[in-house]
Image (cartoon, rainbow, N blue to C red; front, top):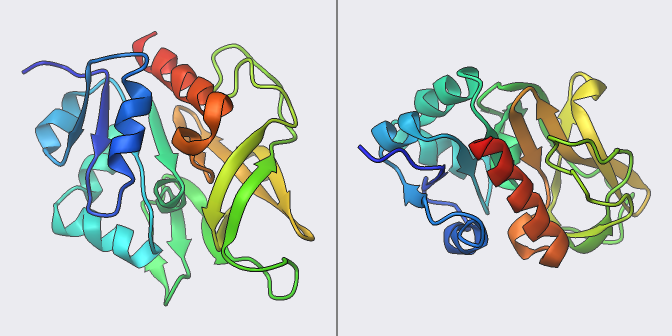
Length: 211
């Protein structure tokens, strides 16, 4: 079996082809797949996602991929969750009920507080803050204040604030924009839709995958 640099997981709710096209700027050895064997052997995985937390949970479960993703992440190989994919990394989601997430980063996913934002969903460009440009990081060479593109009504709330790498602000709410635990990364925004800044973030992830 050919070992791919990046396996983009198809679980029925992903923004798949724009993520694939972004990755192909840096490696041709990338596939969209729901095959557990391909995922297990990959050098890294991306869990994209557009939609509700429950749909994401069920999309992984019906394909038998929940434990595959958990085992991959626990192996120490790089993982990137994007938007809904980032939310699924946490322990619980509260969108249209209460759902168990993957539990890879302890925490919960909750709706923006009522009356604290102009409108929901939050759609548009916002700046990233609160991080440094460390080598070997998903945000290497990204300047503080760089704008990225968000589409969401729910926010990432890790139990341990040390898991928050970067924040953004919408209305009166400061929220986690990038989270991390070891080699597991989550972006609440869409790097594949975030122009040159987002493409550079994808490049950084590919570099983590092939280092």
